[in-house]
Image (cartoon, rainbow, N blue to C red; front, side):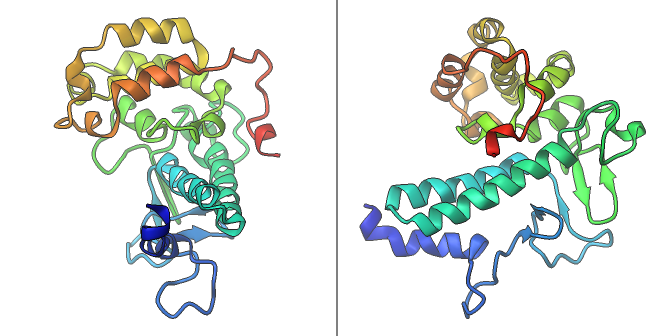
Length: 245
């Protein structure tokens, strides 16, 4: 299958992560801003009054992760290295600009970092909201989903431990009916595996429905696998980027 459709798949890669300056059909690294150290959702050029923006850094990270996995599957070290390099950059940026220390942040004023999470990062401002709402569960969920092996490095235990209480407390009503509560259980697994099992066992199968906002992007199998494969929490999780060195 890979040999038959490889050229078509690589068109998708070239669209977002083309490394060649000489490519006549696709821009070079359409989304990645190497000066800022992260990507922009609409690409380097974006005609908004406040400049470029990115909401979900976790979605961007998974884009680069998928390229690395593709390169590995194809046995192409260059594609794999491109994906890993972009993944490492985006993950580092996530730890600096989206996953916020509530006190003594090195990048943003405490008046904003008290939220613990960013919503939309623009060229010249930052917002505590998403494109679709401004609730606490929406803000936390959009910076965590989807949960994949890429999340191992993206979501440090220390930050999740800081945010999980607010995420859990805010997830009522629409958060449940739209299936986002499954993300709460998966986040909890990073800091409390046993509690995550209990959380998962309480979920109705409707949260995985393809007709819900989050159910169509997650599955019960993925949730249970994620919880089952969590390592024992590290009591000395101080440096988010150690794992990328």
